[in-house]
Length: 279
Ligand code: PAF
Image 1 (tube, rainbow, N blue to C red):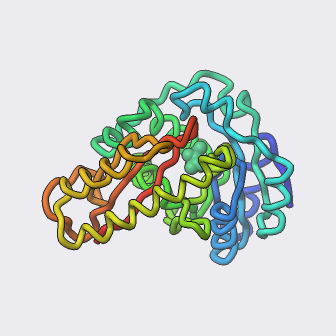
Image 2 (cartoon, rainbow, N blue to C red):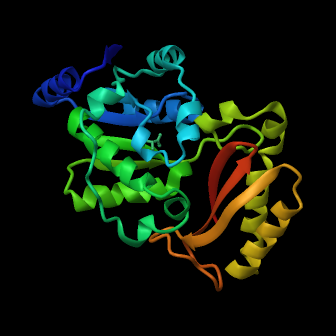
């Protein structure tokens, strides 16, 4: 497995692969890898000739400086895991390599970016758009793999591809869960033992919401989920929202095909997100 730190060596390598007719699969990450990331790498490996993975904690997508500071960084362990999963190239640039100058691009992702994560984390999706666009320009992938835990991010990336006419196929990959149901996330590493024990409650309530969706309206389900967290001693609900999986716009009446439940919860200092298909 190769490790590149510069844009030039990574792009040169990708250009050479493309010229030789090799298909490139790309898995962008911020490191602190877990089984969820590795499942994307394995899938990319099975569908392409070369797998490139980036490890870059992107400062401009963090609206909370403390979250950026505390984001886990475990490059050596990540490299071992990637090697085992069959990754061919790791691109792990420094911040100055990616942003020699302040990034000023402003994307218009429309209504997709105004709800849920977009509403609670101002500037987040613009920062994601900037870095993913740059990473695509550097790694030149045929296919890029994104987990559905960040479902709104996935929709934003699809929109980015459409807006910028990018020649890359976006491959959504199912949420990877621990055996107790907690969605795998790099942030789980920061949970205290007590919060880690509490956190599977999030998916349990989402599943209850899924059952309620057979006979209840979105407003009723949202009220139920709020009640379940109001009475929880540790977990603090930031939002639970029912929205169409297509345009992410809120649903209030009966649940229809493709509607989903989206949740963000604070487990102590750690913010966790998850989602579920309701119908
Ligand atoms: O999902 C992530 O880990 C990040 O948002 C991404 C796509 C690597 C961009 O920094």
